[in-house]
Length: 108
Image (cartoon, rainbow, N blue to C red):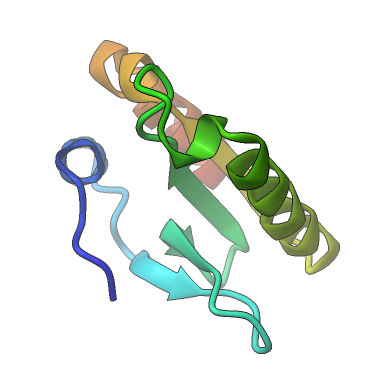
């Protein structure tokens, strides 16, 4: 398991504040043949949240190679029946991310 970022920890606090952690796993490995993991996942509901860090600082998610890798991961997850919320810093800080999670998980 990788070390959680401060942004992932902030998202986790929001999820806990809204009691959305039941059935949730952090760093859930969703594909049996690849090492791909979701930051947050509710496996029984096939719902996941991916925290996209480093988008303003030329992080991995913004490079061509990173973007292509993310597309492969998210497309495979979709084929396997997952619904994924992709959130960035402003979505977490504004509360939008947790509201989207509430809607998707049926808790709104």
